[in-house]
Amino acid sequence: MSALTRQRLSLALIWLALLTMPYWMNAVGGYTELGTRVLVLGLAAMALNFLLGFTGVLSFGHAAYFGLGAYGAGMAIKYLAPSTPLAIVIGVVLGTLAGAIIGALIVKLRGVYFAMVTIAFAQVFFFIAIRWNAVTGGDDGLTGWHRHALDLGFGKIDILNNDKAFYYLVLVLFAIAVGLMALLLRSPFGRTLLAIRENERRARFLGLPIEQHIWLSFVISCLFASLAGTLFALLSNFIDPHALHWSQSGNFVIMAVLGGMRSFWGPLVGAAIFVVLQDYVSSHTANWMSIIGLFFVLVVMFFPRGVLGMLRRKAKS
Amino acid sequence: MTQLLLFNVFNGLIVGAFYALMALGLSLILNLSGVINFAHGGFLAIGAYLAYSLIPYVGFWGALLIAPILTAMIGLLVERFLIRRLYQRDPLYSLLLTFGLAYILEDGTRMIWGAQSLPYVIPDWLTSPLSSEYFFLTGYRLFMVVLVAVAVGALFYILSRTRLGMRIRAGTADLETVSVLGVNVRLLRNLNFGLGIYLAGLAGVLAAGMLGLDPTIGSTLIMPSFVAIIVGGLGSLPGTLLGGLLIGVVSGITTVYFPSASEAVMYVMMGVVLLVRPRGLLGEEGRLQ
Image (cartoon, rainbow over all chains, first blue to last red; front, side):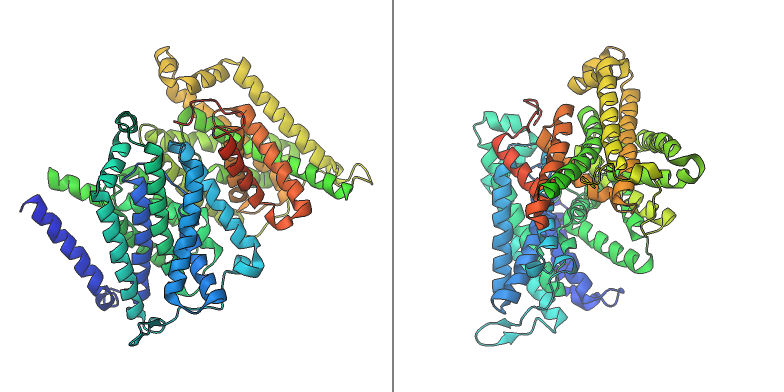
C-alpha cells in the first residue's frame, strides 16, 4: 500500500467515524453530547496547532479567544437577538478582534517569552468575566439563554432539543473550518509558515515578512479557536469563567501534544482521548486534578511525539 | 480619603513584595534554565502549609526558618528527577510538565490538609496596630516588608558576591562557556532551581499570615508574578523586583478608585509596557529571541 493510498484511507476513516458518531457513541458507553464536545474541543486544539505545530509559535493563552467566542455567543443571544447564526458570528468577531489586537502587541516576541505573555494576557478576559457581574454573570457564569432552532426560510431545524441535529451542525462547521485550515496550509502562505517554523532566520534572509506572517497565523488561529468557543457555549447553553481560565489553555496544548503536534489530525485525536479521560475521571473521583496533572507529566515524559507521531514513526520503520 | 489611599498603597506594596519574591524565584529559573515554572505557586502553597504544620512544634520563627528549606528540598528532587530530563527539548515540554505539577501540588495540598482555609497563628505582638491613626500599620505587615527586603538583599548579595551566585550569573549569560570552564552545570541548575523554590516557600510562609491559608493561594499569586517579570523585563532581576512592587502598588491604587478593575489593571499595564518598550522596563536587549 503506497503512502498516498494509506493517507486517503485514513482520511476516509476519520470522516466516516465522525459522520456516524452519534449512532455508535451510545453503544460504546458514551453519549451524543460527549461526541459534540470532542468535536468542539478538537477544533480548538487544531486551531491552536495551526500556530503551535505549523508556525512554531508557542501560544499558551488560547482559552482567551475560545472563551471570548463563547461569551460573545451567549451575550448575543441573551442581549441582542434569539438567533444561533448571529451568536456564532458575533462570538467569532469578538475573539478574532481580540486576537488581532493582542497579536500585534506580541508578534515580535519569541519562545518562552511569547508563551508567558500570551498566558498573562489571557487573564485579562478571565478577570473581566469574573468582575463585570452585571453583564457576564460573574463567577456563576452567564445563564438564562439557550440556542435557538435554525430557520432556513423553508423550514426549521430543531437543534435545541435534538442532540443529533446539533451534532451535525457542529460537524458541518467543523468540516468547513478544518477544510479552510488544510487549504491555507497547502497554499504558499502555509508553506511560508512551515519555513518560519523550521528556520526563522533563513526565512528572514529570503526577504519574507516574518512578523506579518506570524501575526496573520495568530489571527487565523484565534478565529477558529473562537468559533470552537461559540459552539462550546451553544452546546451547554451556559458559559462560565472557567472557559477563560489558564488551565483551559493548558488543556488545549496538552491535547495538541498528546495527539501529535506535527500532524494535522493529531489534536483531534488528543482531544478525543483527553475529553473521554476527563469525563471518566471527574465522575469517578474527587481528585481528578491530580490524575489530570499526572497525565500531563506522563505524556511529556514518555509520549512527547503524541499518538500520531508514534504511529507514523512505526509505519516508517 | 488620604488615609484610604495610603492604606491601599501600603497594602499594594506588601502584595507587590510577595509578587516580587515569587517572581524573583521564577526569574532565576527562567534565566538560567529557560523553564517557566508553572508549579511555582504550588511550591508556595507547600511552603505555607508546611509552616502551618510546623508552628505547633517549633513556633512561628522556627517554621519561618525550616519550612522554606523543606520546600526547597522538594524542589531539588523535582528538578533532579523530572525537569532535568527536559532541558534539551522544546521549552513547550517543560512548561506542560510544570503545568501538570501545579495541578498535582494544588490537589495534593487539598488532599493532605483539606479544602477549607485554615487558621494561621502568628505571634500576638506582631498583629497589633502600631498607630491608632494609621490602623493598617500592624507589626506583621511592617515585619513582612522588612523580611522581604532582607531576603531580596540576601539574594542579590549571593548573586553578586558568592561563587555560586557568580556562576549562576555567568551561566545565564552563556551556559556553554561556563560548562567548558569546568563548572558542573547540572549541579548549578539544580541548586539554582532550589534557590528559586526556597524563595517561593518563604513567600508562602509570609503570605499565609496575610492572605489566609487556602489550597488555591499559589494559583492566585502566580499570574501576577508572570506580569511582574514581563513588566520588569526578561533577564533582569532588579527589573523583576521593580515590576512586582509596581504592579502591587498600581493595583492597590486602583482598588480605591475602581475596585472591580484591581486585577485587570496589571494586565493593561503589561500591554502598555509591551507597546512602548517590548523588552520590559529594565530588560536587556536581545533577550527576546
